[in-house]
Image (cartoon, rainbow, N blue to C red):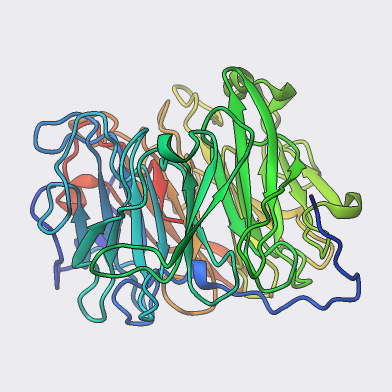
Length: 479
């Protein structure tokens, strides 16, 4: 059960609350281009502080079950400011469409400057065959206008952003949909027209798969200054090879290179060599149905001019690795959620690993969950120095209870502009005083010494003035 942190007893201040709710050869001598950190900004009001977006996809909105909503909590010099927030749903003024049962609007959200005006925008999709909504950011105003993208028909439940052609404008990639090959991918290249939502151009990518991707990840894995795309796939109970789409001046390569099967991923330069590294959760035995019983594994495919893992440079970490807290146990699902960011400010990306079904010592703490923060170093991602956080950790608000799912979603983003990524994590199974599965989120401050519980902020829907019943707030964060 969540007990509000001290940060929540502040005055609401300026409340912004809407009404209802094939790997091409590259010379080995090529120097990597300095890594960009556009994805980490997510500054919707242009004030210089990153903002955080939290999903409640199973919330009831206007009487429609699983209609879903998002909460935007704005950043400040003191970190996330829960007094400055927006509640966004398809019932909110200015958002196109209407709430629909089982739509789960907000299940996936992507933060990027899509129209090139210097302020971050938010692209939102739901579950299954639903449209993509873009909410436009504005200086001093935040997310105040919205449009439905006209070039997305369906299959966009998985959505990711990156600059896949290196022109300086953010692009969106998602499932192709029925009109463009249901198992294929479609890239919408920016800049997008703010009035119509039209992309500058589109690129179709044939995957050879029957079903839409199960996950999409983007980042510069080859050090050429252009983002690359990785798609993950499955068909029925079997996982399929992930695909690496090298970015280039004409957009992603039309012929992808195969990578190992995976169900989750993130990109970050964990060894500080200027190449983004691909962090994955492999699928055990290639059987998707084994994931709920999996102790969990994190694999790193190190970036290089030849792509992720070229030359066999990889690393594998589990809860049995030296220095990693915890023990490999059936069903823990170490790596079910992944995020990368530099917490300590040392130039090496760290990796937050969700372990949402971790059991804690004591009664009634089965599947209460935890998060493990792995440190980057010149030698790559390592177990030494790793730390675990859960609701039984001293200084962490709340009570460890069964089925909380602490760490089901994770995010590393510098919310107070101090040069240290802050750790946000979601706990969709958290109960409020009177309702079940309302969900909640925690935000830990990043420091030179790592994540700290000092200044910790935690909140659930009730503290945000949002619908509570079955909302499962914290199911996802904007990427």
